[in-house]
Length: 156
Image (cartoon, rainbow, N blue to C red; front, top):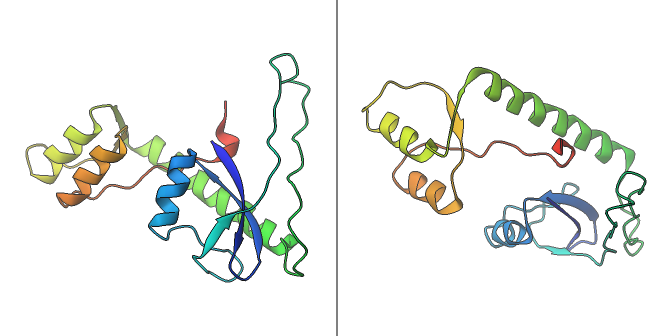
């Protein structure tokens, strides 16, 4: 997971987590990254300081503060932070519900989803793993798939 400090065209500063830098770039190109304050999809990465921790210091290291964004008068507010916490809680509840009530088919997910879509096996709730290319192919075939939410605080 990677955290980016972002800024929209109107100067609103916010942060968001992505699976990788390639995931951020893909979502940005598809206009899926938007400002939580104004909804603008014209977003760019802001300057940020990386956190580098040695193996010895991982247990003791405190998170490095992000480089401050230029003052715009509309930086993150307690309301936005509360909304983010609420959203994360709801995403976690959704993911936990899916994990509890669906079968984990692992790497067989694309094949199992395809078999259900075409009526070869009985429909049932499943989840598992698929590469971006496999997921795209399923969507192109009309198979309804959706990524399982992954949150930054899920590192166990």
